[in-house]
Image (cartoon, rainbow, N blue to C red; front, side):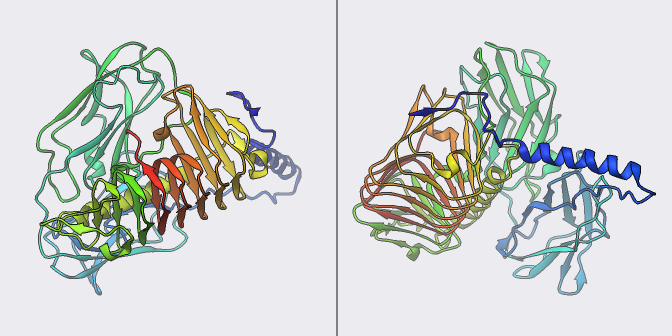
Length: 482
């Protein structure tokens, strides 16, 4: 098998960056020799990374505050740059921007009208801190429900989990919430990490999804006990505070993790399979973990012979060791799925947007027979696995695979994890289709823009998060531990 050593680089890796730097230096030299023909380099315009509510979201609570996250720091937004309208009528409200400029909120002055369509807009005069405006105004719409939301947010997943004894010293600390949070309430004062009585210096950010992240300024001390805390001042976008402060403790190990930071799945990580359009089974498939479809209805689970529970909150199947949830299930399932799908989309975008790959176009897309070390891998083509692939690394190491094409695994081939590597730390971001061949075994988290097919007898240790359909043909999917 062909092996790739940690820290090595494919010859074309970082070539794009080097080329851009070279062109920039050349441009500066040429400009200095010209006759006042030099033109300043223009930074790119800002873009959204997420909004709450989502575009097209139904049943938005009447007490909702709007939020938008940007891909760069913005000048503070105001009433002229962040607006909300009901038809042609402006809705009065208060606009605020986070200290780092990457998030803004719009809080209506009073409850929104029920069962009504509203349109939010960031105008073209909104500027980044580099002074660059949006290329054009950006708008999104949503429809209110009939009631306010008064339920407090809950803490779902934390990374590391409570009582972890070997956290890598170079990793971040995260907490995932059950609903969209007010990003302005998540600060270095409300999300803290302490070593005994000493507060660790760090930066707090919110997103993607519903995840808050604490990034230490430097590596944490090894073999040391730390406590992370979330204060009671943290609130969701409907103004509901945490029911009570939340804290958990963990201990670092002695080593640093290899590879990039893991992709936060948010509440999408609660599912073994999550899809927007449907999940089908050629019986008998076997899924260990929960399944969800949204905005599709329960009828788009096909081949599972689902039986709804008495409350219609979920359904059961003899092929499922878990529960099946759909957009038309009884409350609170619809809102839970809306958040999970948003988190799935955020996770996909986060994985796809990771810059500076360690390996670029490795094997021209053919990775069969290779042993891959932790790192960020990128292909501008389809990726194929015509032979077995081994991922070699430790339990804290991370692999992210980015492809702009399809991912195709041949029949009876295997993805094998060695050295303690865990499926939860392997992320496959696929812009095209994913096909796992007959009798093949796959491992990791699939973040797929389109459809995923596991052919007859295929098995998978991981999660399938698809923005269209998932098809299981007498296949087995087992959700890994988080």
